[in-house]
Structure formats: structure tokens, C-alpha cells
Amino acid sequence: MYSPKATPAEARVDLAAIRHNVALLKEHAAGAELMGAVKADAYGHGLVPASKAVLEGGASRLGTAYIREALALREAGVTAPVLSWIITPGEPLDEALEADVELSAADEGLLDEIAAAARLTGRTARMHLEADTGMGRGGAPLAAWPGLLAKALALRAEGVVEIVGLWSHFACSDMPGHPSIELQIDAFDTALKMAEQAGAGGSHVIRHLANSAATVTLPRARYDMVRTGIAMYGLSPIPELGDLGFVPAMTLVARVALAKRVPEGSGVSYGHLYVTDRETTLGLVPLGYADGILRHATGRAEVLAGGRRRTVTGRVCMDQFMIDMGDDPLRAGDEVVLFGPGGEGEPTVQEWADTLGTITHEIVTRIGSRVPRVYKGWAT
Ligand SMILES: *Cc1c(COP(=O)(O)O)cnc(C)c1O
Image (cartoon, rainbow, N blue to C red; front, side, top):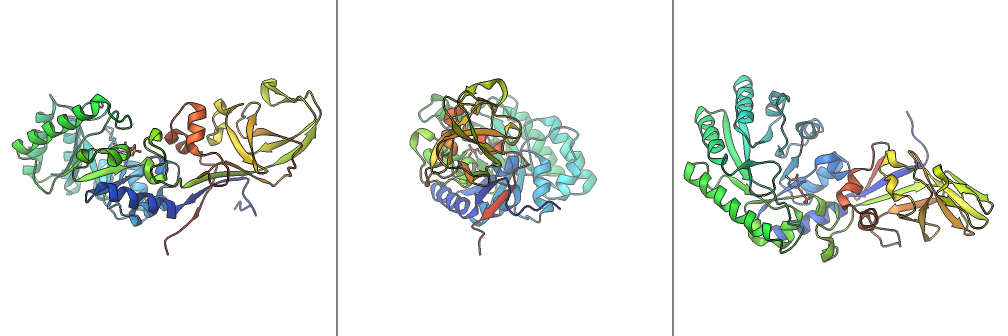
């Protein structure tokens, strides 16, 4: 087995920060249940350790995009309720039901397929029905909602389906004041009223709409449960409002593989986009675009090395990029911090996202599987 004395690069994940962030979101939820969104390897933080911290922080449920992510949680011994919301025909629905994974449906065809799997396994499918209240992505359009409800009620009468939740998702909750927000809440209320009248309502049905941004800014959208993701990992759901008290959980570090002195006029990396204008010290950082360091970071993003910010110098390659240290000392093995909470002068994920013209979600979820996740702050 490969076990280096010190890893070339690692993503350090602070589980105590995740617990803190979830507890803070729980306060905002003001009595509503909290479902932690742990899709995409818990936004790159590591599915199982992060999920455990999310539950310890006060979440009562977990949510994943795909069934296979939910099954991975079950294989790891996580017993909390788990919902998967992107189900594609032909998936192993029987396995999902046997593993007690709750499923979302937005059309009658999928409900039929899930019901068939329920009959086959003798399990009751625990369903969350999704309405499209204006997101324009998943969810049943309101015109198709009565049909979906009727189908679910018929299957409930047969005993193969239980209606556990009714839900929808915001398109613009990270844009406070966007006119679609109130319209979506109104549409969700309409969808809930239709469900109530059809007989699919009741106090045991969990109504959920809010993501992280809505949880902290829209009390009216909290309903019975909120579904939070990005803020649990300490990244602001609305960057214009600042950090909102959330503490970034991930610090990405690498150790310099090679440090060398080069003369003035040296071209650096593919395409020679950068040429040294003096004799200088270059450092090779062993992380590249295959690890999620976007090629677009070339000449733009910064890292902390030797106590100062350095810009990514020359092209980012698949496995490595260079930094220019000038006359500052650098040795192979020295640690470089790409991003972290920001307290030691290192860039934050938010800075990387701003520099690269993207959102923090994309920066952390792209950190590749070659980069080991190393944990601190385990609950005692
Ligand atoms: C990812 C996701 C969330 C969490 O969103 P954040 O903005 O990260 O809080 C909530 N609901 C659904 C359906 C999602 O896909």
C-alpha cells in the first residue's frame, strides 16, 4: 500500500467547523428539521466523515442526488433517513427500497416503476413528490401536479407507497429580492393546498423548499424542513452578505516537489505564457487540473507560499503548476496553501471562485479523488 510519510497534497477537512455550521443553520431553521445535502462526496469534503459531522451538528436527515450516493452511506453504516432526488429509469430501485432510501418522483411513469419495485420487494416506497414551482429543472409542472398526486394516492391506497414529503427547489434564493422568490413560495403554497385537498397533506407530511440561502434569509420558506448544503461546508450561500458566521471547513495544501533557481528570460510551463524578467526561484506545486485546479487559474489564482501570496505562474498542467518566489527562500517539501479559512493570509475558496468567475460549490466539488482528505475535529 502507498503510504507516504507526508502526502504531496491533501485536502484538510475540519469536522468541527462542519458541526458548527450545521448548528448555526439549525438556529436559522427555528424548529424546522434540517436535511444535510451530502451529494457529490459531500461537496468534495468526503461523503462519510462529513455526513457524520452533519448529523452530529443537528441534521436529522441526509439528501443525495443519486441513489448510488445514498447506498454508499448505507454501506458505511449510516442509518439516518436519506432521500435521493435524481432517479433515472432503470436504476436499482429494489436495492434502494431494501436499503430504506427515500425517493423523489416528479412524474407518473417513475412512480409506476417505483411501485413495481415496491411490490417486488414487499417494501413500502417512502416518497417525496417534487413540484416545479419555477426552478424550471426537476419537479412536476403545476399542470401535472394533480395527476402525480392522484397516482401517488392510488398507490398509497394499495399500500406500496407512502407520501413522506412534498417539496420544491428555488432558482434564485441567492439573489435577495429577486421577484421569482416570492412567486415560487406562492406557487409552493398552491401546490401544498392542492395536495391537502386531494388528501395527500396532513401534519405527518414533510414540506420542504429552502436551500442554504433561503434558510438564512427567508423565514417564510422554512416550512417543516430545510435542505442545506454549501453553508454546512462553511461557504457563504450569499457572498454579497459576507461569511454570515459560517467557517470554511476545507484547507487545500500541497508540498513543493521541486524548487530551482532559473535565469532571466526563462519560459515557464506549456506555451511559455510566462517568462521570467529576472533571475528567480521557481517552485513546482504537485496539483493540476486533474485534481480540480482549473486551467483557467493560469496567471490568475493565488496561493500562500513562504508567508506571501504568489500567483499561479504559467499554464496549469494536468498534475502540476509553478509559482515564482522571486528571491524569497523555497525548498522542496515546503507547504503551499491554495485555500483555507483565510486566517493565516491564505486565499479563501470564495476568492478562488471570484477569481475564476464561478461559485464556491464548483471549486470544492472539483477537487479530485487523487487528493486525500485528511480529517481533524472528530467528535469525541
Ligand atoms: C444541492 C441541493 C440543496 C442544497 O443547496 P445549497 O445551495 O448548497 O444549500 C438543496 N436541495 C437540492 C434539491 C439540492 O440539489
